[in-house]
Length: 151
Image (cartoon, rainbow, N blue to C red; front, side, top):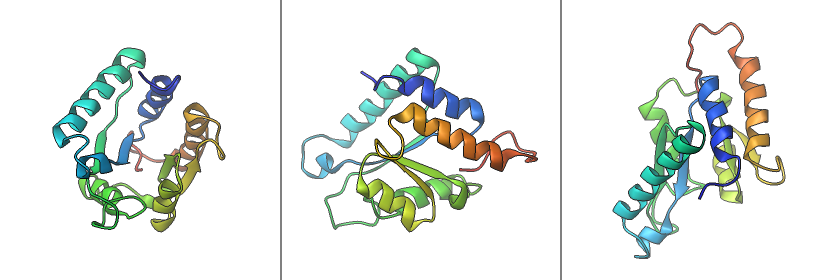
């Protein structure tokens, strides 16, 4: 089951030409509560639900399967976002936004000079966060020749 309004909000990101990338800590893998394969199935299912509910899609999922303090990818560390940037070198972190519901999400964004939106304090929900993101993108996109904006 999706968070209400998630699919239309993500679809707006897709339609704007921005990338929708998920970075997620998944300590349950390190603790043996799930396997990497279980998580990948969850991501496939999430993709199917987003497509069915609103024609939305996630460009990529990056996850940290490690326990706390054992890697450079676990949020608020920067490894997952830097991996996304290696995959898409045109990502401009200074023009990118991280939306999250925890202090580690905000810490990750701050460490990389990204804008951050903490739910529910900076925006009440994902739809409102997307309103903020689209507003920032509109300012940055004026005059850009590419149909796919960085970030």
